[in-house]
Image 1: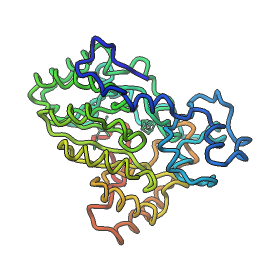
Image 2 (image 1 turned 180 degrees about the vertical axis):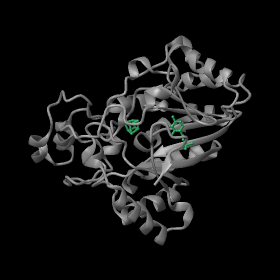
Image 3 (image 1 turned 120 degrees about the vertical axis):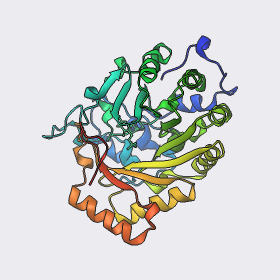
Image 4 (image 1 turned 60 degrees about the vertical axis):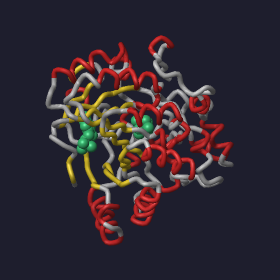
Length: 338
Ligand SMILES: *Cc1c(COP(=O)(O)O)cnc(C)c1O
Ligand code: SF4
């Protein structure tokens, strides 16, 4: 994981740095995960351990999986499958043209008014369907060198009013490292909004600790936190508590999901997710069609089925609980609605 050097840390993290401990204790061995869930019989179906993108899942997230169920929707998001090894035409390494939109180290400026920083390459969970399995994070971290290149780009681009911290997971960074960025942002008056894209409030809600909330609440910016949950079972009381703290700190909470075969490709499942999110104070924002990333084809839901699911959702939910179904297409001026 990425840690700030002690000298760069402005606010010390909470004494026991509890979330870091939990991060380090994540399950990284597929055999152990299957043991914990009583699914030893699946061991023979695992791909070789060195197949490239390591299993990683915090124990608190494992605890939300159903024991003994090989089809559990949380398990399917994290368990390596042999299907990942096959090459499928059309599924490529850089599926969304990110490298073409690069402006400075770790800065992607694709859409009007918004710059997205690849703040960190680390995640608490490795999601099998993710583009991150191939992204060259080694060279592309905005947080390196005290955010200098990213800040220079922002200063020179007065059209940018919203800064998006993404990754990897930007909340993998120490709070002091985030503070280093936002102190500099104060000197860039055209940036008025800070958006954070993070799966940590869902998969490791302990990350939303006192020091983090203190930092967030103190920012002289409008704040949006976009969570990432794909199934209602991902949300439990610990996630509710993290969301409540984020809202109290002044953040608007949204969620993005990925439409995933076998995980959430049912109208009931998606409706339950929207309802559960709203119960936590979170509005559904995007439902993404899968990026066609190599090794993820077995998760794809075809467009006609995706559109039928949206119609079913509209028929049963209030409009504000229906996410926008979108696909990311390289070169477009926005996410493309289906
Ligand atoms: C998705 C994305 C955004 C944010 O788009 P919104 O439609 O505002 O949520 C910004 N920049 C990049 C590079 C993106 O991929
Ligand atoms: S970037 Fe998001 S989707 Fe990808 S592995 Fe990290 S948490 Fe999962």
